[in-house]
Image (cartoon, rainbow, N blue to C red; front, side):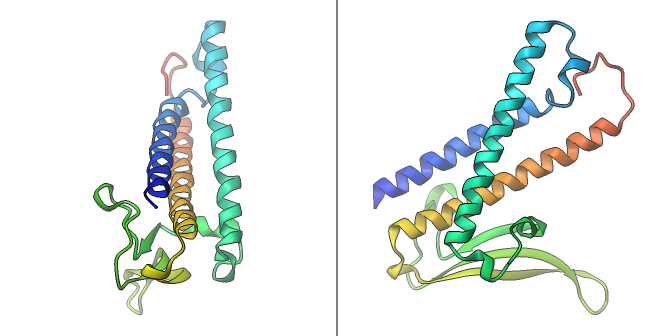
Length: 182
């Protein structure tokens, strides 16, 4: 079981590294030909942009596979709409650095989506929505546990891509000299 946990930790670290790479490269991907005058630098920027998009496509492909395998579609039938949630969490399994992948004895495993909806007074309130229920922590298969964790991490990874895209769009709307990086 520790090898599965080690694999998940390694995956989480790789995803985090790719996210950092993506954040660094996202500035350059606006329009490299507009902001970089010399040809080798422009080619490097385009290569980074392509790698960034490939990482994102692979993440989405694996995320959609897990969405089907974990039967998330039963609670959220449209794959694209799982990104309307503000956050996604996991009950019964630790996702923090100090307890990553550890099951919590006596707890039930659920994927929880968090959204904000207005109450009767119009004030926004957090609402938890169960997207998947997987039974008691003690009876959870190790492979299934890893796939559940992977689904959450990959969802968060894509959500981060979307947030970066949003800010890149806002920056693009600014009037600025071509000599600036972003």
